[in-house]
Amino acid sequence: MVKTPDELALMRASGRLLASVFEMLDGKDLVGLSTLQVNDLVERFITDDLAARPASKGQYGFEYVLNCSINHVVCHGVPDREEIIRDGDIINLDITLEKNGFIADSSKTYLVGSASPAARRLVRVAQEAMWQGIRQVRPGAYVGDIGFAIERHAKKNGYSVVREYCGHGIGREMHEEPQILNYGRPGTGMKLREGMVFTVEPMVNQGTRRVSASDDGWTIVTKDGKLSAQFEHTVAVNSTGVEVLTLRRDEMPLVKGRVWHL
Image 1 (tube, one colour):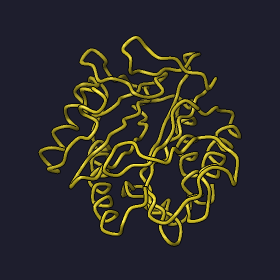
Image 2 (cartoon, helix red, strand yellow):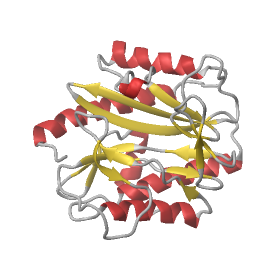
Image 3 (cartoon, helix red, strand yellow):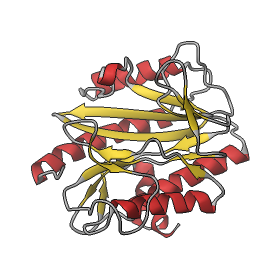
Image 4 (tube, one colour):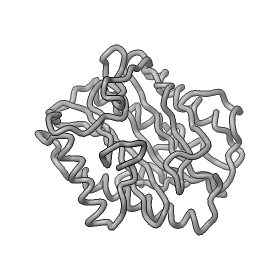
C-alpha cells in the first residue's frame, strides 16, 4: 500500500509516460474514427513509441488497451470497429500503462467538435470535481474527505455521482487498497499516509446516479440515458500534500494555483 521512494520514482516515470499518451491524443481529430481505431492508435504509441505495456490488455479477460465511454456510457466502454465517434459527442478514454513493473491509470473526457453547452458544462464540472477530491489529499487526511469534496461539488452544480465504481490503490497491481469512494463524510475512512498511491476518478452524471450494465458484460450506462463524464489521475501522498503522477503539461498551470480555488 505504502510505496518506498524507489518505488515512487518508478511510478512517477510510468505516470509521465501515460500523460504523454493523452498529450498525443490531444492533437488528434477524433471525429469519424472508430473507437477500435483509437484503441489501436494508443496501443501502437504505448508499445512502439514508449516501449511500455498497456496494462489493461488481458486484465480480467479484457481484450483491449483502453475503455472508451461515449455520451451516456459511464465507464468500461469496449472498443468496436462499428462505433464511430461523431461531432458533438463526449468520450471518456480510460488508459493504463505499465513500465518497469509499476502501473499508472488516468482518464480524460474529450469534447468532440461542436459539443453542446450542456455537455461542456458537465465535462467541466466533472473535471473540477476530480480536482476538488485531489486537493484533499495530504498526510493525516481521510479517504472520506476526498469523496465528500467530490460529491459536494457535483451536487452543487446539479449533478449526481456514481457510487458503484470508485478510485483505488495502484502500484505493481492495477487494483490495490484503499478504495477511494466518490462520496463520503469528512474525517471517516482510512487515514492517508505519506507514500500511499491511488487514483481519484469521479464519474458525474447529468441525471440520476443510477447505472445499469449492458449485455457485453463490461459497458456501464446511465439508467436514464443522460450524459456522464469522468476524469481520473493517479496521485501520491507526499510529505506536504499530494503529487499528481499522471499530470499532463496542459494542467500544470492549474496545479500551480487556479484549480485549488474552485
